[in-house]
Amino acid sequence: MTKTPTAAAYLAELTARMGRLIEKNGAAIAAAADAVERTARADGLVYIFGTGHSHTMAEEAHYRAGGLALTVPILATPLMVHEGAVASTAFERMPGIVVPVFEHYPMGQDDVLIIVSNSGVNTATVEAAQIGKARGATVIAITSEDYSRQAARGRTRVADVADIVLDNGAPPGDAIMSVPGSELRVGPISTSIGAALMNAVFAEAAARLQQSGADAPIYLSANMPGANEINEKLVARYRPRNRHL
Image (tube, rainbow, N blue to C red; front, side, top):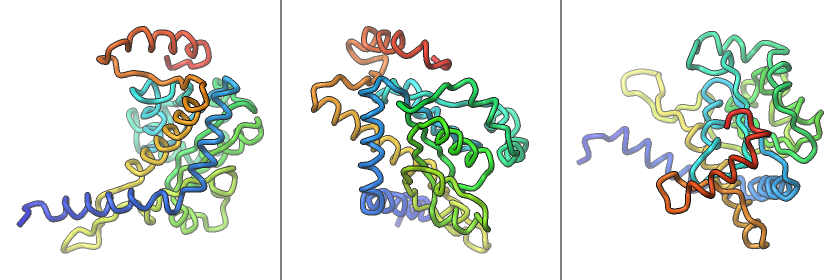
């Protein structure tokens, strides 16, 4: 008998949820891949924004081995967790805070903006989606439909603003495992599933580009043969438009 029953149950449930993603999100993944492919062909960029723990999704895609070099993270310290996690929760609910942040990222109609927000209702992420729409970018949301509907209470959701919605299927509160002897729950899933959805979209877009004869801008792991030459060319191409390279 396993000595880690809760860990095993968590991994089994997470794996099962991963396996069902294409059933619920197949059409949305295809639409998102279309948008990323169009952006790549137009030499545009894919911007990625989230607050709190969701900001890690932007860093996941940035300068990523096996990832697309056209991705640009939108990063603002007050909205992240490394220099004040409690404060970041207050900031992400503050109207107008993302306006000066987005002034550093000149997205337009040839670009895609991915907004990552599990609860889908915090002011900063909703306003970010609205800014992307106003600039003509295609806005893709990675969110929990169930959680955001429960949390909205009449408020606008990121899913209401976005052109394309990828549903991570997370329950309200995110955690999926009960803790014996209490009403507490543990084992969040939104980051794991959100990263899988995002990378599925990028993989599909890259495959389509290559199959059509276009070169997908893909970073290689630094320890792979030929990586230095390929990555240096991609950095030289995108650094003028990506302030984080």
